[in-house]
Image (tube, rainbow, N blue to C red):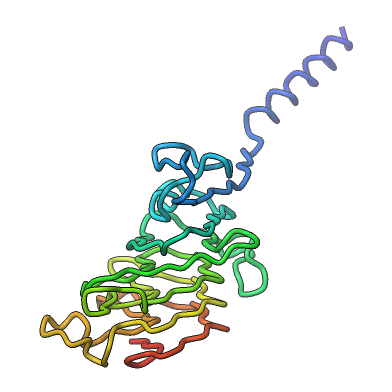
Length: 231
């Protein structure tokens, strides 16, 4: 019967579309508010009323291009190391003016949280390691509140490549104040602060180099060494 043939064709077409059509994953937004009594790094952190307690807690949940991490104000600074080394955005629309396929880390609307990483340590406040297309935007990093000699971590925001490249990342619109410490060498004999820079970009092998990264519209004030170091 022709009608049965036509019906079978419709069924076959439906099954083909169902089986091979692409899966669309909606970009997620993660919230960070360490002063919120309901905060927990164990939760999903995808609603503003149940945020993560730390920036790292939210970074560890991010998986897809287009995701955003929004950080809210706190009475005291977010004093932590943020290590970004697992997930990648994509190149499609990840530029200084179009960031829809980046993974974006920035303050929530109307918020201006202070970030720092105190202590004479060979690490950064925010470190991008071996991943691509992250957008770090609009933060205030301020080392002036560090006690115990006023030492900060070695770098404010760093991009590293080792074993794989770190491409297409964006550092824009951030203000970095009084990073490093009281003098160029931070008064330390450990060597960690001898090369202390507010913004630092470097490869750690001879094969993989950071490329196509954008550093723009940042304000660096009271730097104790070179403001931006690219190796």
